[in-house]
Length: 195
Image: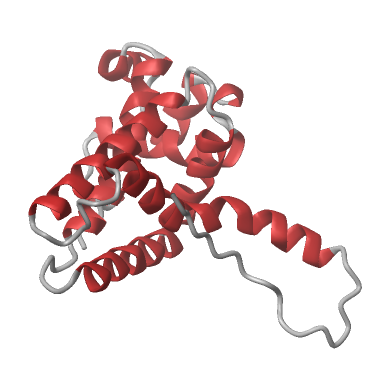
C-alpha cells in the first residue's frame, strides 16, 4: 500500500504542514495546538501555513482528508475477487494492519470520533461516505447482501473496523487496574452489529 502521507524527504511544504498538524492534533488535540506550533513543527513560517490553508478549519479538513485517504487506499489495495465474507475479512484485516502501522492515525481518530463536535463531525461524515461508497460497490458486484439495508451494512463495516480501536483503551485501562493473577491474558474487544 502506498502511504498517503509519503516521506518527509520528498514532501511539499503544504504536505509537511498537514503532516505536522496530524502529529500534533493526535498528540494534543486540535484545540490545544496553534497554527504557530504547526508551522514550527513543519519548519515553515506561519504565513506559509495561512497561505496554504487559510484557517485552522481548512488545515483540519486537510488532515481529515489524509486520514480518509489512509482508509481509501487500504480498502482499495485488497483484491475484490472472492466471496463476500472473504473480501470483507480481507478489507477488515488490511484496515487493522494499516492502523497498527500508523499509531498517529489511531490517536487522531480516537480524539475526533470520541468528540463528535461540529468541528470533528467532518471526519465522521467523510468516513461514513467512503464506507457507503464501498458498500454500494460491493453490493453492485454481488459481494454484499442486498437483503440487508445499506445503512446497517455501513454501520457494521465502521464498527468492525473502528469499534475495537475506540473501546480497547477502556479494556486496557480496566485490566491494568484489576488484580488479575492467573486470570489469563488481557481481554480483547470484538464488535458485532445486528439489525
